[in-house]
Image 1 (cartoon, helix red, strand yellow):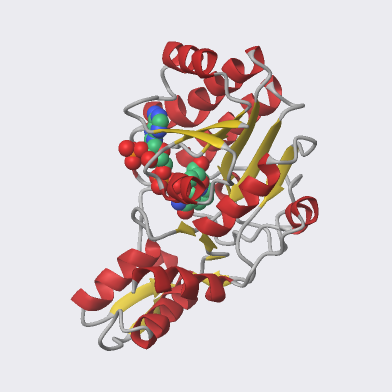
Image 2: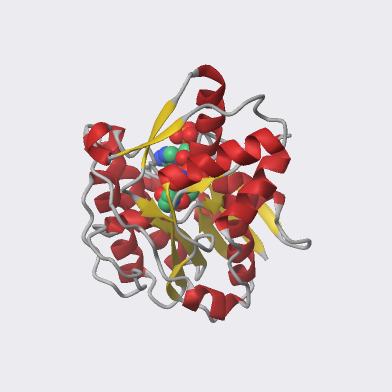
Length: 287
Ligand SMILES: NC(=O)c1ccc[n+]([C@@H]2O[C@H](COP(=O)([O-])OP(=O)(O)OC[C@H]3O[C@@H](n4cnc5c(N)ncnc54)[C@H](OP(=O)(O)O)[C@@H]3O)[C@@H](O)[C@H]2O)c1
């Protein structure tokens, strides 16, 4: 199987590359080699390389910046996905595409299902949803959309690495307690994607995060506890719970971002692992 992975250098793409099963020919491309928002480049690249599968891990992920940079967010997240889908359709290739919990408004108090009605509350979420809709329209029979949330890994910038840095620099931190979700180690999502890569019969929309629920405050406390335990932090600082209203950002974020993983577990045969266990494993890679 020949697989093109987009978004090389990103958190998920790095884990996908590392976990590629033996016998799979991987062509991993970053924005320098394949800017997915460039239609002619995408069609030429896919036609020339003729992959069996494209895993689209490329995205415009700067949630706050997207509020100003609307054109670029849509160019990458909507049009980039559409161009990949059109190019794959011409050669009968399949796409595994990664989307986000931010397609939901966060007003629910129960788990979001794969068929819950999306209602994004920021530009990033709306641009990702537009990409999902385009993909489903063009390649309904040979595509998978997997929505994930709160992604971190040893590669790239993320909440875990920011917390570890700030916990060394600051005398105390205030962290939001009234947004809840499920942290996701990119490695676990990459494992799920490789299992699904080998199951061409799987199509449609799925949800994958680590198991369990946390607020950003809970997540920060766990990062600090594990950081001290593993010697990544020399001491604990006071971490105070603050409301979202005390930390205004350009983009609104869903207050409740918990998605139901049941169907993704069922089709893959994999079980989600609690986020704290995954966090500990990721932090072992930082030691
Ligand atoms: N991070 C999260 O918390 C989170 C949450 C929910 C869903 N997701 C989704 O999960 C997927 C993977 O996210 P991630 O955390 O791995 O993101 P990431 O670390 O930001 O990686 C995204 C990659 O896409 C690249 N890229 C940006 N514009 C591109 C373009 N026009 N053409 C080709 N590549 C381009 C980026 O390159 P540059 O770095 O050079 O810009 C980066 O390497 C994305 O679909 C994202 O929407 C992420």
